[in-house]
Image (cartoon, rainbow, N blue to C red; front, side):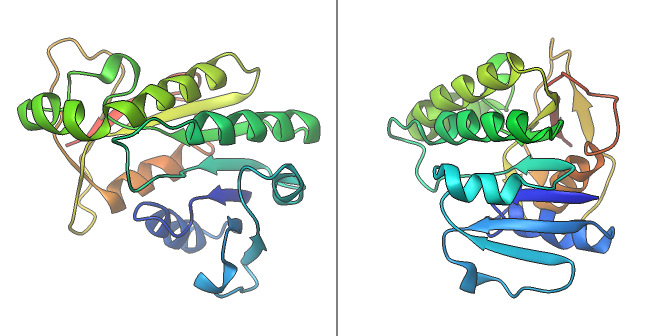
Length: 208
């Protein structure tokens, strides 16, 4: 499958990229600095910002699916980065007839708020990530209002370690607390959503 990956050099994106290539996908990565990766027959690099319409247009052209996995290192201040990049991406996907979108937000978005375990719910979210997640909520709203074939993936807090499988992917969060997930397992689940329809038009919380 031909896929565009936004966020290919992030802590999650590097896992998505590696596993996508292992699966035989042809990946296009849009990067602010393309010297961070090496082009290859299965990896096309485009230099540009995800908030630049011309760069996005070039990157979306000819794709069969898009993974939006952009992040910011600081989520403790107001931002419009997530909603802005999503709005521009949706416009390009609609314009060019690309239907499949897998977007990554995280624990704390929408109705997943309060389901990340005591430490995350009471310390990390209110002090360090709340303001960033206000914009991730706007991002999710834009996607839900679109006519695309979308899946929003909400990983729990990231933990280091090898892929171990046996993760949970839940949309009914009553009584649920999920405190962590490995990046490699999250990447595997995200890539599964490119072709699976189990969570089409849904936003599963994923973790152990």
